[in-house]
Image (cartoon, one colour):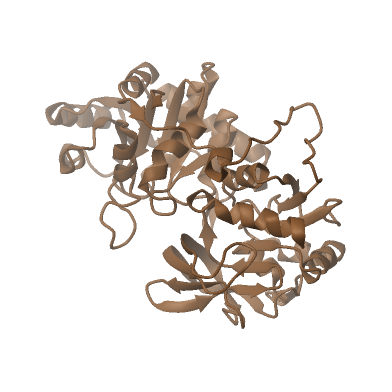
Length: 465
């Protein structure tokens, strides 16, 4: 299969240059013109895809060559971009920054090459004029397989500043496709782990995306950007599908106006959501559905009971430390989660889910499924991890190897149970997480598309527990 969806990768020399503003604004500006826009994010980021989804009305999807392997980047892209008029891929960190010690692996440049997509470089020009040409020339020439098709200048101070920047870039031979003024930056509130997720901002998030779209519309040449996107090379790969990954028949589609389709045996898997649990990959729910489960979302901040008939529970990442008081106050739900876990039903918890299952979080009672205490920490734990399953669990048999990602500013004591979830190299070797009865709880975020058998095994355990 050949994918020829027009596409752009939005990159930058470093973090903080304005990638999110430009990428999200461009997505929204294209969508406002009636185009079907496919939004993507390089790397394991969970927050930016929420803004992308708000901008486009489509699910924001991650492209991570470390978690999923380079061979899945094209198929996952084609899966998300199927039927779209254009795709916009927001990069991560600086353009050539990837997994530590792994060369270009998982960098924006790596993903751009895998997608055969032209790159638009977003440059913070606030403290330079002629030097911008040397900077852009360096990025454009560093790797001849990466095609930098244009530059967007961010934080430009004045007409005269813009004139100097354009003159220097004329000499570098890289076209200027947009200029964003310093006085028009969009307010993007953040805290200890980055931007505040869309689910927590509601109307403010909508306003922020609209402001980004207006800024890009005013300052960028959308026709030239679309023309550059159309110059992307054809991508020869089959689109990923959950059913194909599992070798299963596709699930019954859900009509927007109707009830959820019932699986043959009514097997329901509850998935935590709402403001406290916003970190998840869309492919996880798709794999669970393809494996035969009815995926039912619920909000632990509001719902006092698990969905009726719940046979398994998935609690992903998020910010439970921000909502610890509210989560603790919802005692009926905490008891329901505990009862489900004690029944032996499968429970998969990652990072925030791990904290929620602990005995307490910052001194406030949580579910008590795991005999451990969690607290906020001064230390940020961040990075890719290689992991191997220490023993059998509801997710994987012993010896299963997966790659994951840690991103938290909390600590759990003890860090591993009598039956740990993973042996991790990070870079030191350590045991991490908890496996007990049907519970698998860990700090490690994993992408199930890399190991779809995880979803099948989880649903099978739901069926037999």
